Image 1 (cartoon, one colour):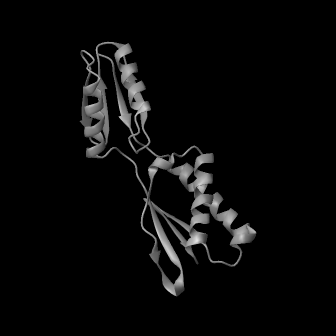
Image 2 (tube, rainbow, N blue to C red):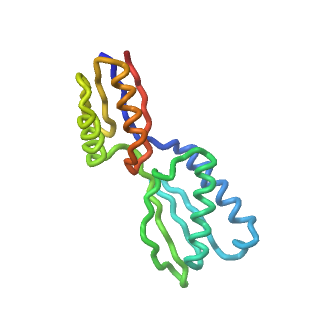
Image 3 (tube, helix red, strand yellow):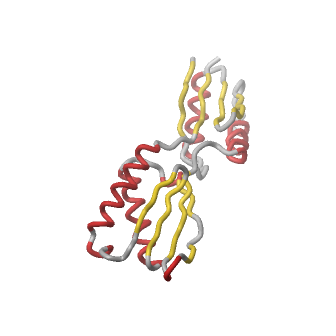
Length: 162
């Protein structure tokens, strides 16, 4: 029986490269000179530090440009609230969201079920969803439907088996 997996993954090497490029650009750009603006990458989040909220927005824009250029979906970023930090500076944590949560898995399962395709079922397996079907065309219709739906997370389709 043909099947495929719906996953939500991030290439952390590309995220690391984008943060490094953004840090280098912040260090050399005239409008960021001597402002103390920094980007720090930890395993599951990026911390942005800037002297003002305007500089923080500019820092976010630089980071997003580098991520898009490296083909990392911005849907994988979850922005925290802007916090006051030491000496009048501001800080913001940006979480990196990978994997399909239980809520997103339920939503994907509901979308598959609402298509009313005969012989097509879906099942949550940890942080991915496996979709089974009798016909390859039905599975392709499911993929097309999930691509047009905005789930709020980056979605990849893989492990296709005939």
